[in-house]
Image 1: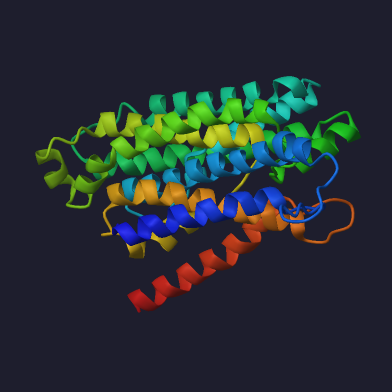
Image 2 (image 1 turned 120 degrees about the vertical axis):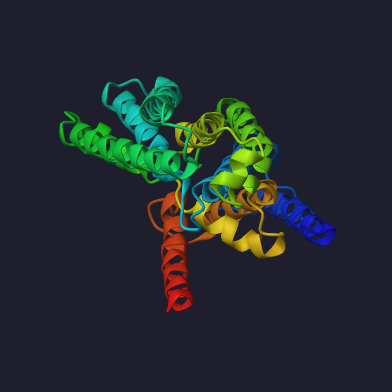
Length: 324
């Protein structure tokens, strides 16, 4: 990506971050009369929420770019591997059992279980054909996602407490409301490690674009690449679900927006997608705070779905025209 696009992305982030701190039900005018208790509002409420939006958006953006490069499918999304649904199942179990304080641990545990299942099911695939291993990997992820979704529905239907049911449904919608620095401390380290793992695997993803035989001749080891994808996606997706619930479509939308600005190599798309994903989630969360709704604010997961679903439909129509 050219230098001016890097400058533009970083500049937009530098502009959006302070604006997100000022915007909300109570606007803070830095040039006007001081708002009572403005410092606690900024430091304890809005700053951790904004940082968490940057962290989660960056992780999901990088994960989407890496997954689309790995599967060689522009319609791939990080949720396809089943990590997010199983992490959500862990969080739902924590809420049903009255262990809300341990919800992030249960969600991270669910993500870790999904990673282990992926390695067991697809990790031992033959390395003779990279494409065959990728297909098996995708099917394993879809199986885990389907099973996790069914189990989550079962747990919700058996919930003995209507208050727990309401809390579960609200949490599954995805939001950054009422998050603290504690949530940032939970999500930031695994997300950062996951982005680094995915970004350093960029050269291997670039080699895949040349075909299976060329990738193997360049030293790509399919088993090692699968393990890298499982680890990187598990960390970024699991950490996001652990603190914010289900937030979809970021990993699908962002790579498509950034790809025209790059040389179209998967490896060169990961870091720009992380920056653009951080910007998208930050702006979307700020918009959720500003929309006038009765009974609370719009959930971030719903807002991104309202953006992502038409975007996905547009991609399908464009692909149909290209193949027509």
